[in-house]
Image (tube, rainbow, N blue to C red; front, side):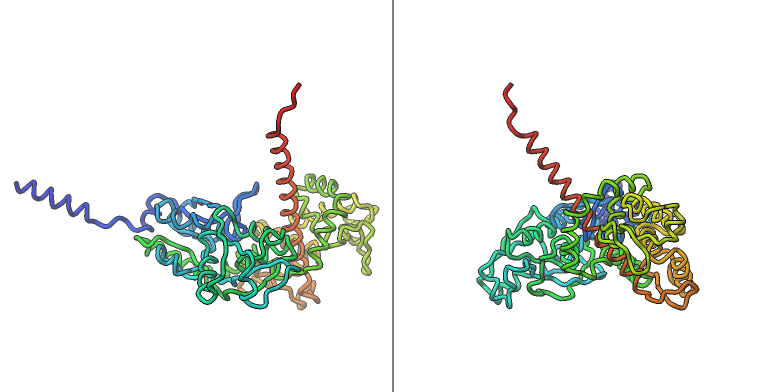
Length: 455
């Protein structure tokens, strides 16, 4: 009888004990499972591998914990909370705003970014002067997004405000619908808008609905305090040591400056100038192991794809090579487009090789571009200065350009502006060529699904 009582008590104690904390589960399994959005502002996957601001941050966090990162990307923000509540994911890193609705289900960590929430319209359709001007017009937002909560809070003061919600769409697609005139308005966070306006330059901010909206990682309420605390420590340290700034610059640095006329001209030149030289860029890129679209972006920054371009300083051709560079490369005619493009590709590849092996991508690319613009010795100077000042010479965001160095930077802003312009052109080219491929795929799909011809 005594043995039965002891076994019964032991069983009760065992069934009443607390489950291991979320952090203990992560460390025991050796995996950090993260749900995120398939979005340029969170996570994307390309032939070169996964990338995105949220991916970079959680990968660094997983590395600090010494565990493998397992990413679960979802197409809709409405899928995120169910993934956490079901235990499929340990945390969410998806650019989530902290809202009262989400607080009912989640704990939020330390805010690591803030965004502005915009109402977006298309130029030429009439900019609203106030919220009264949007009451009778179409508004569409993502289901389950913080933007629904923003509109709901406005509806308290404007009861006739109406909107539709779409569970099968991302912000980028909603912005496309506004640009195409399919809807009057959508709501977008500033990072999403800043990226998409380079593709659709007619997009405009109609009204600011919220300023400095905090963004944070989300955790299930049950048993997540220890993992949340470790994540907070990681993000605070990442802010102090400059890693957050590095990630932000990597994905948003080129979006700070927007030139409406310049962007429209670039898209027009993509259609009427680039086709003459596209095959040359593609062949040169293949020969020198460089994405042809990056070479084309360099060519546009240098000459706007004009083969006869000549500057007052003597550089000339599509890739605007100096005479000294042409002599170094053994080129005879800088105005010949094929010679210029292949020479520029070779010269850029050479700058990439000269960048220190300790510099990782994409910082390696940014430094090579700067070297193409102002010479490699200036890059060496800048990296030396950064090291003297206790910074990280291997990161582009820490690079400084000063005139007092041996090779000098009399106009220190030029390399930064040059690189940011090329980054913007390159991203637009990526988007335009991806659109081309989608159109081709859709046409082939329609052809394949059409009625078979009768023999």
